[in-house]
Length: 353
Image (cartoon, rainbow, N blue to C red):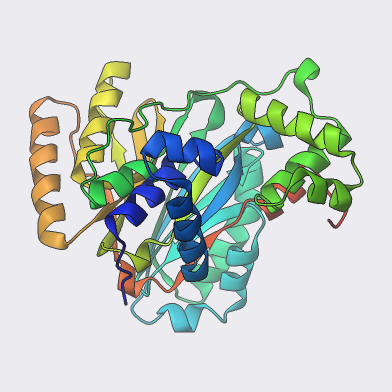
């Protein structure tokens, strides 16, 4: 059953997605809604478990070199109920490096952080071997995005705006640029690592509560919060349970761009896919883009997709259709998004907090 949001609740949802780090006072000023409406809407969203706020670490914050997207097409004899109790699936889903996983009976798309390509293969290949041994897999493809050459954009606010036709003028336009690995001067101390892990694991706790859990003073916690967010080591993002509101399909795509393209060509393809559906996120590197978007239904998706692909093909920017995995939201059987175990593993955090 889908939830019905009032016009003001839709605005608040947009505001939380667009400005996830703001206080209620600042949020009210930015979106033109009074504080009492924001308070009531947030309480309702919390009761519905509609939205949660995440502190997302950058690759260089945890010493990761690459992000890998993994597209799996499953055998008809291996629906979710067959897979979910199997040891290889449990290892896949519970692996700390797997920060995101969305699955239906027929497909799944996962995101891994890894220290290197070798690290990815050592962790991933044994699980895939077991998948093949159990005849689970029809096809599997993965794509590596090195953090130092890849840009990223989180587009939940764009999705809310597009789905509800809000026509906001304060839509985010920034794409997070690639970042270099931390140099010796920027290396994290042991206290930095523990604090960063605490921010990721407990994104909604106050600095005082985090101080109690970590044994680090509150002023130090507050200072590191400012440092991590200002430097881009952490970013605040909104995660919306899209199954509960007004859309039908979630699609993941991987598109290759012609050889010899420039940054403007990459931007043109990126903007085209933002028009196909309500965008959720995108990773961009020279030659390819991986992302996801929402659609209100298949006819609308097909019409928009065909139109944009015709244009991109006529411009010579793409030579083949993108990989596209369409998931009806009602058929999604498993969703995971959790960065904390990955941070603990990458930073060798052993202390329980």
